[in-house]
Image (cartoon, rainbow over all chains, first blue to last red; front, side):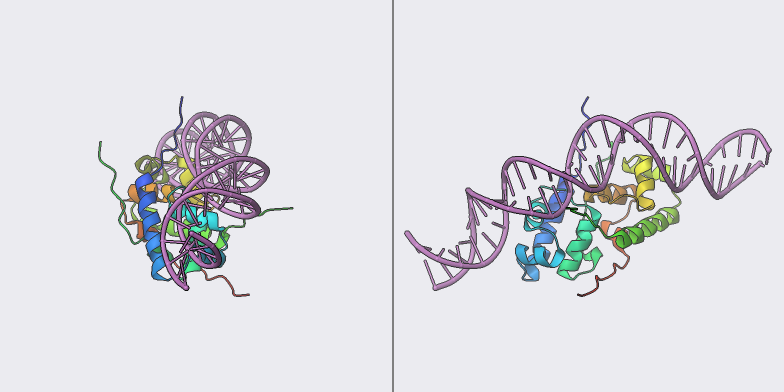
Length: 84
Length: 84
DNA sequence: CTTTATTATAGCACATATGCTATAATAAAG
DNA sequence: CTTTATTATAGCATATGTGCTATAATAAAG
């Protein structure tokens, strides 16, 4: 039996896009965000391409790296799950 | 050599407290949130006691379970890391 | 085109999140 | 106190995040 961890790919893609926008609007490269956040460059790239499902503490690091409020990372709308 | 994943315990504790408040203000038990979010009860408890560092998709599930905006989960202030 | 900057991928090792299940601890009633 | 509801812990199995490092792909200049 498959116990599937089916996480919200749609949400992750929305978040990825939002983050990329935010970062670019601040004029910082992935490498610079890497330096400022303490995350490795490959991890920044993984998040911005929605190839990973980051932990909350990682989000904290990103918010600090971009010097923004945590909530600002989440100013995008999550799709409501379809009712059964 | 220890490669330590030193995540932000302070942030996780703040988040835990914030979530517990939010949930109680909605008058829902951990069990009910478990049901609504699709997360197991033990996981809700782990988060509210800051014993785990949840993934972004887990946060999505909680926001849906509480029927709130994602950003509302993050209406608390993160401590700025001390400068070196 | 050549050089340089930026972003995307990859693979491995290790740490940890999460589901599942059971149980304990605590609180709330009665 | 006894019963019931709620929350906290625990241990195991499995999936996956993240650091690290190297490399490839793409973009931006020159």
